[in-house]
Image 1 (cartoon, rainbow, N blue to C red):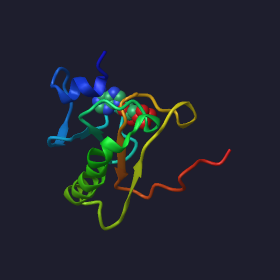
Image 2 (cartoon, rainbow, N blue to C red):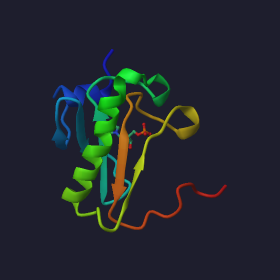
Image 3 (tube, rainbow, N blue to C red):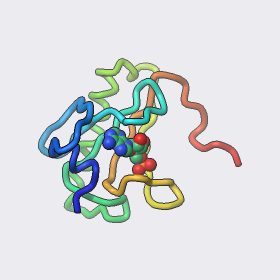
Length: 115
Ligand code: AMP
């Protein structure tokens, strides 16, 4: 069964796609947590970081190359931004198709809220 992100990549459901190439696709998060909130997703379905293999090195490296490009396009490169990948239950991962969040456009505060 394909993930909701595969459906976006395959144009089966709509999304605001900002970038795509042979290895990754990037689109705006449907529930943005900052003025810039974009997800970069490998076109191959990898459920979590726990499922990554050496064969994925090139596509996962591409996430960073595209993150840098998008940060420049969005005008957030100079002030900085956060790249985030959730893995599994304790990280509250919701969509089991590995993805990198790019968050920026305001000061984001500490990485974790204090208990
Ligand atoms: P995570 O908790 O890291 O799995 O994050 C999943 C993210 O996917 C959340 O920020 C959701 O708002 C986002 N999301 C879920 N469905 C869609 C969708 N159809 N289009 C864009 N973003 C989505």
